[in-house]
Length: 155
Image 1 (cartoon, rainbow, N blue to C red):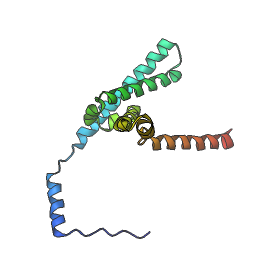
Image 2: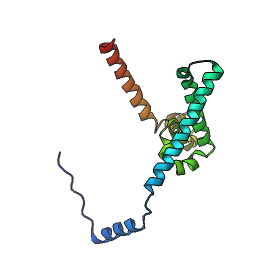
Image 3: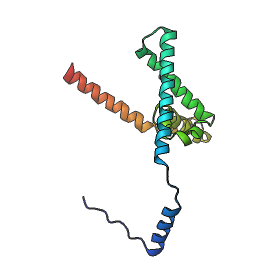
Image 4: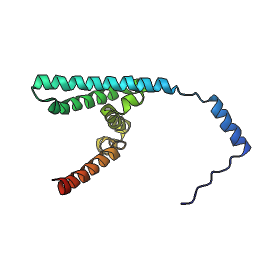
């Protein structure tokens, strides 16, 4: 493949780029990493609490209790997005809030809220999985091929 040549900037554009670099705020990487770790860990602790809670209350194994715990975490993420709290927390938490299943819920609900003015079918129904749809599709297709490989070569 041929390498693409970078377009040469004129003097005015170069000066502008230099000005942008000088005035652009520098992110505090250490602070962002620590906040993501703390918030992500807190979400994991809450998820573990729900797993233990459902296992004890429903008298089921922790493996089976993971399903209602996951649903509860998705519900909490969707609820916080719906009432407008999730984005405020995400400003500080960063990837610590976006990576777990709560981020998945946020991506679906925020897309649905964004297009609700277009109606339930053409807006909410069709645009709800705009961001998360590719993730779901990749997961389902990958699971299918792994299951097929397992059935053909392992069993």
